[in-house]
Image (tube, rainbow, N blue to C red; front, top):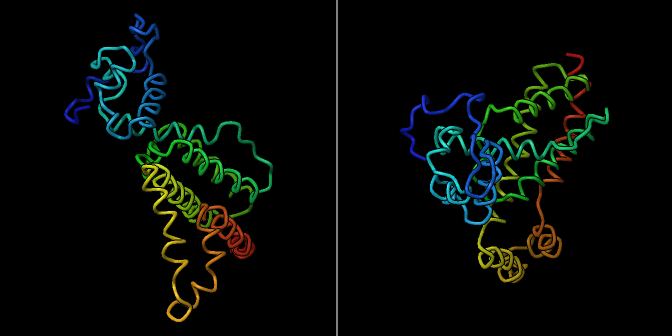
Length: 241
């Protein structure tokens, strides 16, 4: 979508509903556009995020999309917010702050990895949209209920969400690679690291079996546990400050 499209072309929420179905029989809506965009990005990558391709997939005149999104960036923010929302679907607080943050973080990571192409595009964006604001409120609420004072809670939130999104983006980027490139990267651990001499690389040689096995998966679950453990240690001092 052209970045020169002005805000005046975006129709207010109440006036957006398309009266006639698209050629495919669907009534155009923001949700339908977002879901279709996610599917196209998953199949064809970032280049699929265009008015022409979205219009064709929806069976709608491409110009109709401007009633919902003023440009490609606005649509991208909606995609990013949709991933955040999907990560929170079905989540319930247990009252145990460590378990609640653990489950929230793992949900975010898993959701982004289930949509790697979209995650690569949107994991680093701040959407300001409903799902994101709900997530920020929820995480800060968990920290407040645990007894963390606001100054520490804000820094803990920052560390928690940046860690989750950074790992999600990195792991999603690896999944988004072409299969041949992904397999070549994985093979390096055996073809290069597995052949390093103990004379020149003693620590790698000694740890290689463990290293090769561990590097096949994500480091996020362990990193998350380290963060939660550090927060638990800091809680008494933070609460007493």
